[in-house]
Length: 67
Image 1 (cartoon, rainbow, N blue to C red):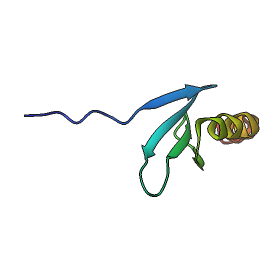
Image 2 (tube, helix red, strand yellow; image 1 turned 120 degrees about the vertical axis):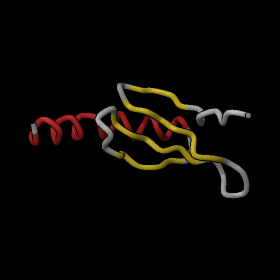
Image 3 (cartoon, rainbow, N blue to C red; image 1 turned 180 degrees about the vertical axis):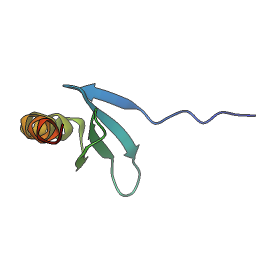
């Protein structure tokens, strides 16, 4: 029985960047805060880092407000 390997995943400032796939539609990454809150989808790792850097303060404030 063969096992399916999980897709590649990176972290930046406590957020996960998950490779969704490539091919004819291009490469896409899903960006998610460690709490599970989604930040969005982007086309490159550089865009993922930029999105995290822009949104990390806001997502932390939202999480603190609901805690």
